[in-house]
Length: 109
Image 1 (cartoon, helix red, strand yellow):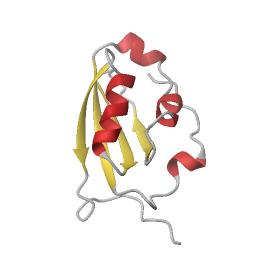
Image 2 (cartoon, one colour; image 1 turned 135 degrees about the horizontal axis):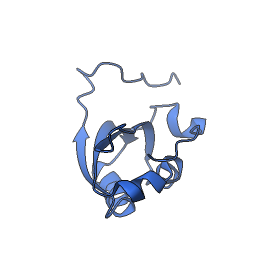
Image 3 (cartoon, rainbow, N blue to C red; image 1 turned 180 degrees about the vertical axis):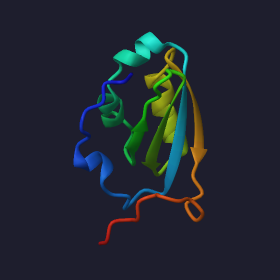
Image 4 (spheres, rainbow, N blue to C red; image 1 turned 60 degrees about the vertical axis):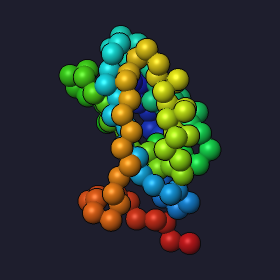
């Protein structure tokens, strides 16, 4: 699956400044291409105001799940859909942060 490296701290440490968490489910349609993609490269090219918090690759090659922090679900969609075209079909779900369990707290100022 995706080549996963240690993500730089600037990509994953803080929630400060992001308006929402978004779960993206990537239904894998081309496992061979998916397996050659670099998660860090995809995450690093994300739109301003967005960054990848978690990448959860599947063992069975069916569906990968990512958690992003973003200020625009449409901006994230506008980036990820072309970046994964022909490889995954993506579903975007805004997290209800008031009832979610396990989301990081915003960094103290």
